[in-house]
Image (cartoon, rainbow, N blue to C red; front, side, top):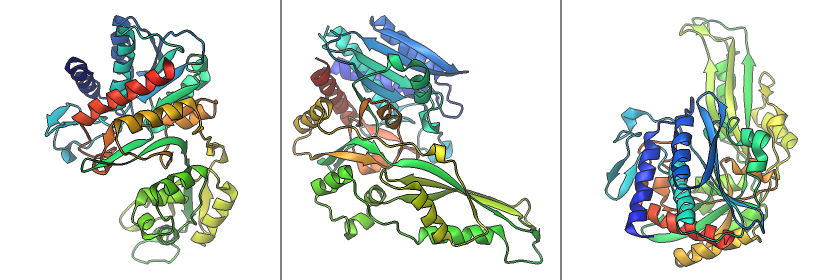
Length: 419
């Protein structure tokens, strides 16, 4: 990776950040068109598939010998919004500062998007002989569930993205003070589901308070949930992960680490509360949304029963759609792809421990795994806990030297599996 290629990759990332693809409304179509033109100029077969007004996905393919099924690189083009007053820089105008590049999407997910595009360019420029096709897929709408993105692609164009292996976001290479902590290669996800708590009451004038107030009911329910700890449950992936790190799953280290805690338990987080119409009116209705993340081996009916018992209030109705509960499929840790990722990481990140990883958040990977694509999540650039926490928050940034290292890592992984 010479200086010219590294500069090209950084300038590409800057250009991608300048496209304001905040979802909603997304407006990813213009960015997809820009990338499509770039790939076509480099003799890569690419096309944009429009899934809605202003929304688009891009598929590109470099042909191989067809002796094996394709490998695919995936990245989403939409980003979450940014509150300008909370940023030290303009989130949609990339800024280099103190060795970092600041901008919305630098990590999630335009950093990976840029690296994947450059890998495609390098495969063509270097006339790499491939034993299998290499597919590049950029999707829209990931931040809102993928209805117009990955779901739409699977339902309408799956034959164009049907691959044996794929690499996507979801994993991480954690580094602190120049020392590698571990690399988590995501091959499993928790199951997201939203449950609405609803309460009706007579309401009335606030000058005559009553106990049957939806705010009281919901407040008590929320605190009961906060004070309850779901039991620790292991699966084959989390067992290997925690054993590999030498972490006592019943010790203080788990209690002090929100990520570890969430990997071991079903979790419930209140996210939206609605009640009341005026300052002097006791509301007649209230609701709170619970964003739940279930372990793959959790029985949903048992979870609902537990939640009702914790809340202990017959006035509260639990509303949910069981169709939202999708199976969480595991990608094999014995595949050629997983081995390639592990080998490259051990070569490029000396002394690192590489482990399978169950992510607590949801990605597009889960949808493809249900279609028998072996997907592995890995942000290929090393990242600190502080920078990782900036995803979806203010002052998102990526360390430039780690971004460059990520290009080298991703390039070598693709070469191992595709050549």
